[in-house]
Length: 426
Image (cartoon, rainbow, N blue to C red; front, side, top):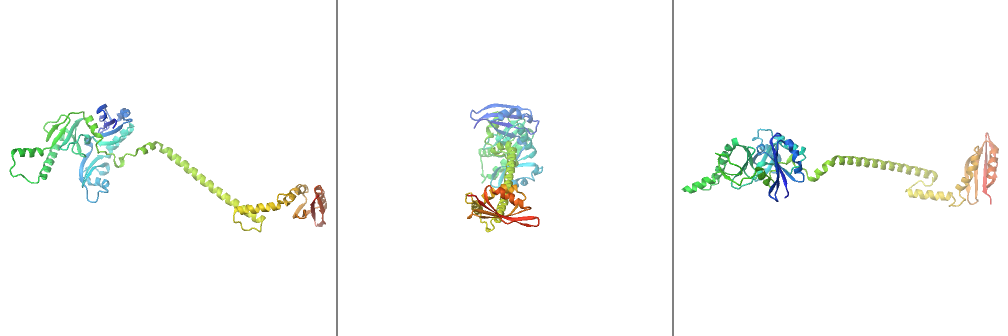
């Protein structure tokens, strides 16, 4: 494991903050120091960068205790724990963060701390730009002994580790009464474990029995005088170094429940959240616009289809059923080819195209109907005009390209009707 930073926070914002960078590989302190208040955490942000950071909180602010687990509540233990502690706590459980440290059979070791405290610590770290891996009661980072407690003093507070998941932070004033109560518990446990009594024990056996019932305290800093139990000195070490050496193996991380850390990928994506939301809104708008556009085009296509079928039935009334658009186009092309003379210059459309300029010049004459005979190659049409001379004027214009046969002209009131037969000149 590479270097990591350990920060021991204070109970209040105005209390000192101790920190230490430890290298497990080199087994030495890289850097250490003390800040006057929580607000100065930004001064060690550079040490936190590119390093794992562990935050320690005073054990005096955390209640570590053991509770019995009711039958049938194991699956919902996290939700039940606060109510199991309700009678032991002076505060409303809604104001407390209850964390499960360890579960063994029908017993559970828990840590209880005020939400207000956790919010203070996490806010100070966030303001300094320091991201932590764990938030641990400092006493649970002390070395663990199978045959007794571990003790060390820091800033006038005694840190006591009782087991893997239990410990306290004791002021010197009530350390002795607390140790006395623990000594009593040890003796009671020893008596309950005794299977049978020896009728006549020797003095040596009695001394050994008394010694086995005595509380053992392994200490790393000068021991206070007159304390209950048997205090056993260990190799003195800097307390922060001692805590740093044990922090990585501690299982007392309080970051659970609402304080549970997010996965790393979510933290990396967090700065892009607003961009992602904006992109999502833009994509949604574009999709909606596309859908509206497609629907509009579909409606327009249906309108064109209906209109084309209407024109088809009007032009070709013999075809009322239109099974498909390809059928419609095929019939229209066939009819157009027929009317156009199959691509030759003899179709009716070509005749009409040649007649149009002359008819436009005699606007007083209107054509009533046409009849085209392809076999005889002639065009016959009925016309109406206001005077006889209009027929004569049209005949003169058409005579340049056609053989014009002017039929009988009849006047009916203010109109003159007549027939005109055209043949192409040979």
